[in-house]
Length: 116
Image (cartoon, rainbow, N blue to C red; front, side, top):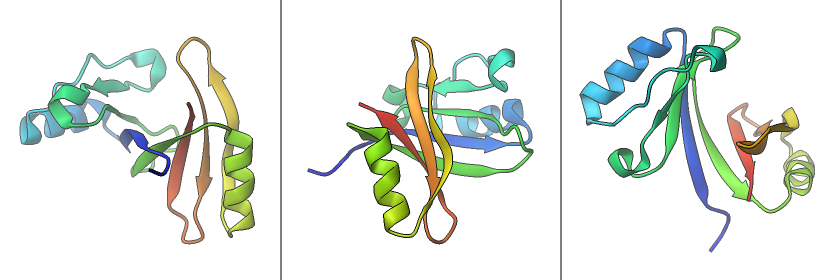
């Protein structure tokens, strides 16, 4: 098996509205919005099939991102660049939560990486 998708993210300009939309549409259980984290609300994986989050993009853009678990963020980013992608966010740690990075594929799709 390849590297698994472990998280998804739906980001937009109205986090609270998006959380309500997806909760109502798909019966997803969305946790309380965290104002200090862009009104990010965690989506319960039991209700959606895969854990995720819905929040407000810092740049005011809308996007959907998947996150792939990899053993080494730097190696994965280097390989993405070698294959024509570009680094969007170098490895960063949210202490006690996650270590992550992001890249854009050759067509500009943003993909997240989670250190596993």
